[in-house]
Length: 513
Image: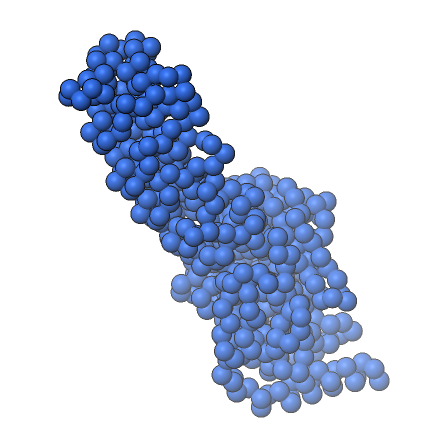
């Protein structure tokens, strides 16, 4: 009786929801980039999966999505597996397949899906990887697509070694049925040049909004699923959609049409068949064939559930945002920088102050447009120490363009702290004549003195810089001032061994130039 009831219940759900397929307008969109405040799946309606190469505008998303493959089936760069046809024939003991079973002759080497949120940080489901010991049993393979040639005789696909990554640390992993948390955050053995997914850090996914996924359903090469909507978003940790997904899609990205992550695909609906529940394929005795599990909708069943991305630990998301901007600056990737600058709150975040302000990195790497973009948002928040570090970089490298940018963005020309030399004093020591003129034109204090009472002429005389001596005299720096030793600038020049500078400064003091 129990078996009959379960079968009838599954049929009833499908029948009831068959007529409830109108898609309502999505709820108002909530801005995603603001500051932080089991395995079974199935097909809902038509099977909207397609090869990733056949989907437009998702190339970067495909490149940032990886397949989890057991080390036990890898030999060098060869990944061994049976086809879907062979796997299902063995499982159901039949070679008959309904026409709705697709991709029968493709390999099924993958076990879970994951995706990059930073150059070396990958997200997947918690039930895929729980510990570092678990993680070290697997390889993460990028570009696992049907474009790879499958050797039907030896049963393998060949993957370039540089597309294979190992895990060196599990930054976080939670699988908790009570709290509905299911995620893992993995650190890869090296950084990838692939553009990671952006992700929601604020607001909520909107009900009835469109979502997509890319993954390895039942271990197949990456497939793109679209034409799905968010069915409900009331739960704290997850939302439900009608994405077409299967075992193997676990850990995959659930993203909006603009490509930013809303969630991690973790679980879905099942059908009862032959004494077990299945979320991908079932045996139908009426046709003596294997069929794809299908539901008319996700309204009255578990649907396809995704762990909300912004419910991951805040420190993980903050780190990912920072590291993406850091990578973009270090590698001169302006478009990627502009993309991740949507998270503008990171520029003044406490984490950034501890790790190192990104303006400093941009200045060191001479990424002027990136620096200007940041300064437009942060100039009023920079501390005197921050401003001084930037000025010091410009002067030490005699970078007139950098210095101009800093002055244009109102970095104080006399910025200093703890009695350190002012920018113009640093410029004298670096013989940075053009920079000195820039600082003077910006209003730098020409009367500044060091702790020994040396004015700018004293400093120029110490450095034996006649060009700077002449510049300061022309700009009105007094040659008639003594330092703490009672020396005029001319005396300092004499001590430095320059008779010509001595004569010039003496004449300047006596007004004989």
